[in-house]
Image: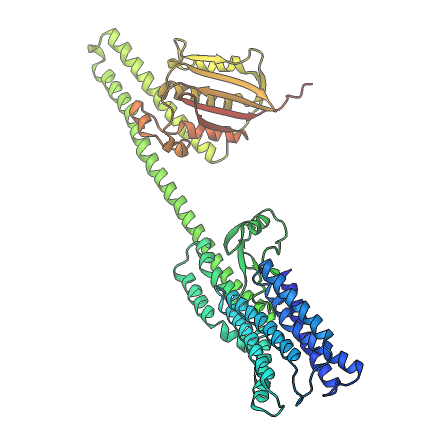
Length: 558
């Protein structure tokens, strides 16, 4: 992981300084023997490795170009070799030969170039980051720059008690303090850094109560400041069902891993993946190498924010349930109003006709001839049949709502039963219905459900479609499939979602024929009571195509 890479290079950098300090205490001020001179050279080699190790540390944040890496690596190796082959280093107060001045210039050039690169890269790495990460990176850049200045003062000082030497010590001490603050900032420092994000998060949480209505809105408001306040790279929120509610700065590969149930991967620039349970869901957090100090305080802060977010999610869920319940009640109220209006209209016509002709027979029977009486009787039978059909529909609706429809399966010949249904429909004469059902097709299902649904589908096709009307049936995979297709204009696309709703009729169907809008709703309810279903799809090139699917079983014979 990049975080472990950064940590290793940081440890190596300051480990090098520790070695320099240790050797400085062990070696004499004026080494003379072979081993003392060798130790001094090793000390200087380790010292010049320090800026190179810092450069390697910055690679965890911004990948460098290969050309720059090759250049600084070659410069470090050559200078280290030059250090080892030098005959000796002049002591304090001794004249400095030309070769030593050239070496000192190369040393300063090496340290300056690397320190400038390190400082610039660290400063650039903090751009666009949350306050915690940005200030940390800028402190690291400042510490690297301070070390460079301290080195120049050290090179310029000829005496240990000079002003340059004192300035070098001060700058070195300040640089060390800044490095410590940047690499492991105390809690109070982190709290001060988080003040802008804290204020932003407080505003977001306050807005959850008054502005956020849905879980997606809550995630959109709270996730970005939640990630910024702890310096996280990315964050994702899921509900209790594992569905993603919202996310911030999450790549497609990470999202795909979450959606497929795979363990969250710490690819790309992340250093660690944390999963926290929240009320009503879970929180997935990807940390970042820009802010590696992700400890107990950060986890506790995340848990607190997650708890507040969970309360807001529950509130949004309850609000959504309330809205949905209100919609259901409003829809039920609308259905009731439609039912009363439609029932009153549909019942009024046959009742008025029956009452009118019955009164005519009562009051003027002696004045009517036999032909007129027969006509009145015919009309009375038609209106009574219409009234009976409407009442039967309402009774069907009541039984289906009460789940009181008994399913009685029996073996029957599908073609014979379909012929009986079609012959019982007056408008189906004159070859308007083409029956395409195998003669020997036997099934084991509820014949009442089959008849009621088929009657409704054929009647609708005759009423609202155009001939030829085709009825097909086949049985496979333990299902009976019956298709009724016409060649009329079909159902308007915008009305398809309401096609099986009670009391729903399109403008086109209302203009073509009268009806209650209950037939298809009852037909589908009967199919589902049989553990089947009724589907619609547009026919090609035009028309309507309804498919009844009923599960069937083999009848056990004695």
